[in-house]
Image (cartoon, rainbow, N blue to C red):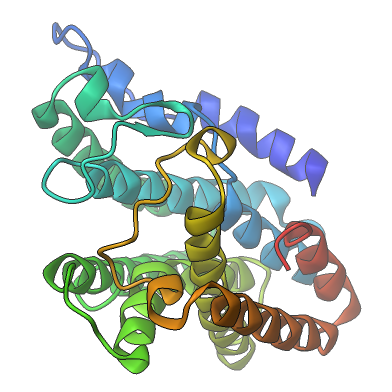
Length: 282
């Protein structure tokens, strides 16, 4: 996975959106947050699912992994805006609205959203597969998916929700794009609909675990260690504020064990690829 992610990093740098004009910094802003780094977690899941099912599919999967990475980056840029989290930095660098201005941040996010679908349209894959991938990203990243989760999270900030409502939010805000990454990678690797859905369902559970883990990190680590503002969830419906730190940690351990068991039931090559991609997380 290390070599695969290194190859992806090169691919990302070579395939960022281009928009030459006389604007002093718009084109630079398009790639700035993607180039700032990040875990490449969702891209790694695409690559792991694809190559775990078909060892020859790495090159075919690159544009799909890039689409997911750019779409995720757009969501972070918008999440950090003054109207939402009003964050000063992300990935240890200033957020775009701090480096430039709010208009540039909004438009850069819009551009990355659109460009992610162009990456899928231009992927070296059969047209039937590309249509599936476009539909998956639009459905899971859009109106009833990630955006709905963000809308609910913002609308009910400062109001206490119950556990089922918090899970509903985070299965959409975080889970659906993670699940989509695995499902899209599965199709690149040649999976049928049933197996791709199996990986999608695993991804939904992974996304919930990932959010619980992120809430714990927010409560227990300092900003400098994680590259973004922490201790920022006191007025939000996080798993830590709802359950308390000890119970949230117990829930995370329970979810991690469930995920390890699910991975162990997969075909050997895919099991190995996912274990590699998730090392350090579960």
